Image (cartoon, rainbow, N blue to C red; front, side):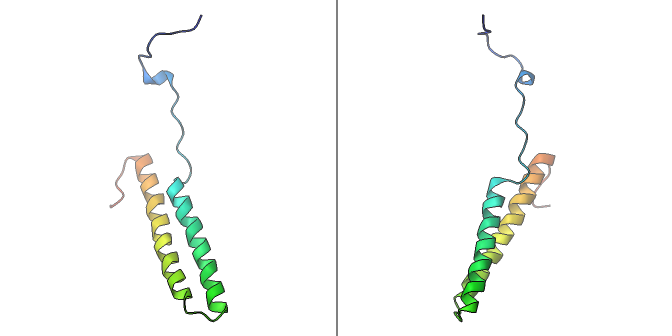
Length: 82
């Protein structure tokens, strides 16, 4: 029959491999690309609202880099801040 006893070692359970890019970094990258596209469309239409889209693109770009670095630091056991 089946083994119903408790597992004594975590070596029996394979660990899940980390993803290549953290999920939040991917979402921030998507927001960045969409904000750049919205800024281009706004400026082509002659609207100054594109400045807001450029600022949002810069913010989401910084968030993308932060979450990528944080993911690498977690994987390698280092610190994000330096």
